[in-house]
Length: 449
Ligand SMILES: *Cc1c(COP(=O)(O)O)cnc(C)c1O
Image 1 (cartoon, rainbow, N blue to C red):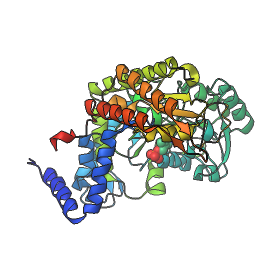
Image 2 (image 1 turned 45 degrees about the horizontal axis):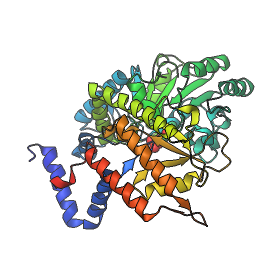
Image 3 (image 1 turned 180 degrees about the horizontal axis):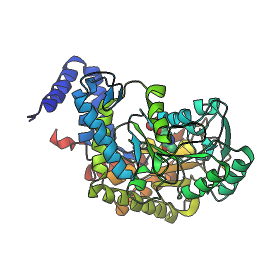
Image 4 (image 1 turned 180 degrees about the vertical axis):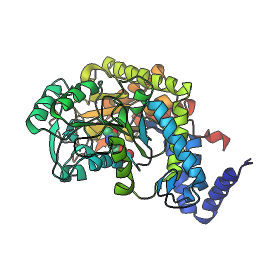
């Protein structure tokens, strides 16, 4: 079947794995089937293309290439240089950025790197609290960002919207060097310009971590932070449907200098990624990022992003119609957050749904009296169902299945949850039908095997 060197290599690799390590091979097979047969409504899930996976699995992985294209510490980098240049050029085009670094191993590293490039230990930062929708790397006490810096946190107001007034007050009071924004469970538009205005008032840098909404930003369905923030970070595997990895991007501030160094901000990021924070880059992942960025430039991606939004709107409306309290009354992105019915909590709802092959995650909601490990809400996301080409009609069906499970589930003494066997069987069968009719693009239909 394969008339290419890398194709034969991939085939041979799979054949060897199957023969020599059946234990691991079987695990991978089962994982593939699990993805195929479950309905993922996890807001941080994406799903990468088979061509991206092929790049990750190709022999380019064997190249050690410390440094940047044209300035490597090793010989033999001719093609990895070109792959990295391609990834950078495409990412710039996708996001309208002036500067992109494609080497960060993940979004967490990208955030740490921006902080290390600009800040000194003990400096003050302002980030969104983890339990309000921020990320660990935005200053949580259990994360390096919380240990190294003097962190002050802003959050949501009573309506569940980012409390920009509180953000500004905290900024005026504590004079942070950096304001971190971007969220993991926020369903409304983030006003990057407003945050930048506060930052300019107090002389702070803005780091916008758009990991969750990067695809909508790329498609023009959410305002872009590229010029509003000094630095924009994202992972490449959630809404960008690429390999696991991160990006750091800059817009109009790329060639500016700060008040504490003659070097431009982008030069400082460049040397912070390597050699300050990382060694040799994952060249196979960088090549896969180039492939993923290429896909984002195709008109089909605009359609996918449109479907992400339409599906999320339909999910929110369908849940509301069934009497669920949708936090914020709806959504501007891919996330739908709702309060679970009183006979359950977030954790038991998540478990009940997983037992029926519907994957979601528990999430705190505004004013939640439960902790984050139990929570009173459930977070849904439309990235993966949109990738499966499910539309609003199927979202109605998903909402119906979720409602059936949650209505039928009852909490057990001691914290467990039970879904009556008859309900579970019915829902699992419906999920199987839905997944078969709307297969993941990278999953070969099982009947063809
Ligand atoms: C998922 C997420 C991250 C972490 O991404 P990794 O690539 O797994 O490190 C960072 N920030 C936000 C807002 C996220 O949602």
